[in-house]
Length: 164
Image 1 (spheres, rainbow, N blue to C red):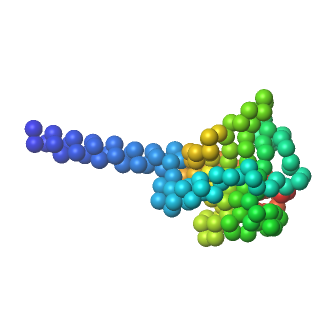
Image 2 (image 1 turned 90 degrees about the horizontal axis):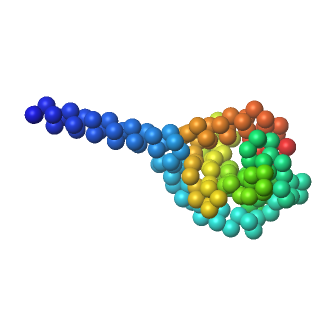
């Protein structure tokens, strides 16, 4: 019976460790990523009032099979130099299905020193209600896929497609 208690405690610790690791892997932001997600959540609350680069106004056909269409919004900092976005730039891309129904959106924010290997972009995915569901550097299969794709198709060297 004495061996049962340490074994149970060990199993509980393993489950707790896997749960924490799973939350990080599956995109639940932790640490600095959680702090940035909370800040970003407030920053993008009024993104629909932001500007859209004139060459991508309205519904734009997506380069991905899903979503079918996208719409872009850029904060004033990003619009100040869209070809070389300064720190503090935020880009929101709404995603729509074939019926032009909102599915959710993705966000990129340039943060000095955040992730130099990936041009200091912080990546986030939000549901159609605006809640960030996934965010960070390469902390999940979703954001890793975003970064990998942006690296492969990046004509401008800044990991953005909207200004290429």
